[in-house]
Length: 285
Image (cartoon, rainbow, N blue to C red; front, side, top):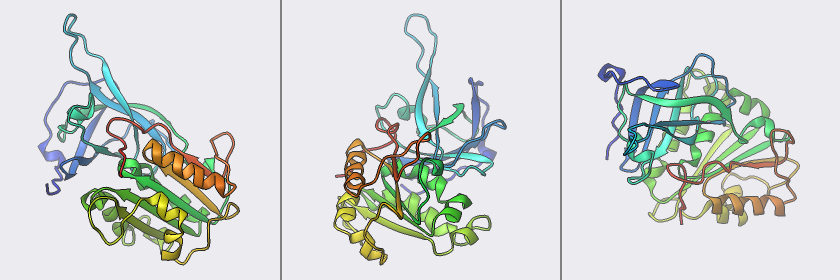
């Protein structure tokens, strides 16, 4: 399926939802991945990398006819300075939420609870020199936010975004975003040559193949960019993907002597646990 970005000119009126925000654009990247942007509540303040609960109204109760909000945790893929909010999602045909969410149109409304939370924030890490973002599938969303935040490049000399998917078409969202940053009038000068992008596939043949955890362990990623071996004094990691990925990278970090950080006690690495489920992550073996 080719990309189809719609415009607000095609908006249509819909019933007002609680905590409603209006869809401003939609891009379908392939048959099972899409991204969309919505209006941002004026009162919403968040740190790049955080997530919010978004959703739609569920089906009417068969007896009472009442509807309840159907919500899921989604990382905000846009940076904290953006005037709109961006989200990146998989389409699950029988998923309670994404079976409906994938059919939204420009001008429709979604529910957005304006209470951002999450551990994939710069504040949860101790100071370092090099940042690794490790992700699979739509787990790239929080890092799509962070790589557009000037604070990241003020704090780190090098940023490595490592993204693994099954097929090349699933890498398009991240690849296009990274390619656009060099000429971005707002963020380009901060990025410079600091951002390094390493994308792999596990099923479809591509220039780079393999699970990101294997490539971390055997030093392939470090060799690609002429980086030193991972060191707890200089390297920091953020991880977002399937439970298997989270556990594997956590083991790699702890083997290197790193401790897991949090908002209250920063460490050398952080793992987002909120995104294992419908519409957010998959296994990419």
